[in-house]
Length: 343
Ligand SMILES: NC(=O)c1ccc[n+]([C@@H]2O[C@H](COP(=O)([O-])OP(=O)(O)OC[C@H]3O[C@@H](n4cnc5c(N)ncnc54)[C@H](O)[C@@H]3O)[C@@H](O)[C@H]2O)c1
Ligand SMILES: [Zn+2]
Image (cartoon, rainbow, N blue to C red; front, side):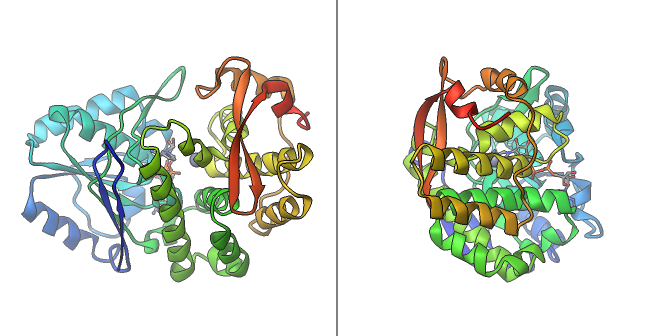
């Protein structure tokens, strides 16, 4: 069992445990937690098929979990359960359940404990750490949320054995984001172990999860509320979000992010921020995991989404550009410069 600690200033700290046997012993884990303190278990039924878990509220994952009515229903269920101030919300599922459960935990009785058991690759490497919670509104994604960190995150790559392939690849997109933007050693691991990673080998995945979380923890500790450095975690996301929205959220998030990284690698090369050899290596890495330079919608379509981007500032955007393999920086660019090369 590997233990990581995240201690950001001004946010509660998180203990992350990565280890085997949690999936097979999920029921025992929850029973032991319930014996320690009052628990409200919120779980995605698809994530725990065949495990005999008894949840207090079942919510299917996906964006339909992250709605204002679903948040209300979750708070009503907490009220019916009479979870007290010493209690803890246990969110078992992917990033959608984590975002919903985290937001509900931060609001109920002005805030109770939160434990997360992430069951998708994306939630293991990204959303379970850093304290961001959210639901969507019809006008946009993640418009309502709080910062509320999990006390404890328990990760077992075995959960990934039942994950549908597009969802697994979505998580790989985020892994490659960290590899290309922040961690050259992770990039080497992904190059070396790409077959094992594609086959969801628990050891290879465990190393990738560990390195992604170490990188995220470094950044979250330095910048808990997204002042600057945390923007580096958005590599590939400007174009990614636009493509995701344009697909009506039919394409999983990390897959559009991988496409976005492809674009910023080309942009960084063209604008002289990244050398040609590193840019080519980054693109090759994406291709090894099956991410290609896809057709993207016309620049005019993208522009509509980019103008609505909540991270946009006036006519300029903060573009995250790779400066090599494992390094990146934020460059202020005008929209036209960013859209160059897309048509
Ligand atoms: N809070 C953050 O910092 C943060 C960071 C990144 C993304 N997010 C959010 O995370 C959400 C996406 O999360 P996600 O990619 O984990 O997807 P998800 O939670 O929507 O799950 C994807 C699909 O996989 C199913 N599923 C989950 N675990 C499974 C398992 N083990 N076996 C079989 N099926 C399983 C779900 O039911 C769902 O159909 C988005 O809403 C995004 O905004 C949050
Ligand atoms: Zn992302």
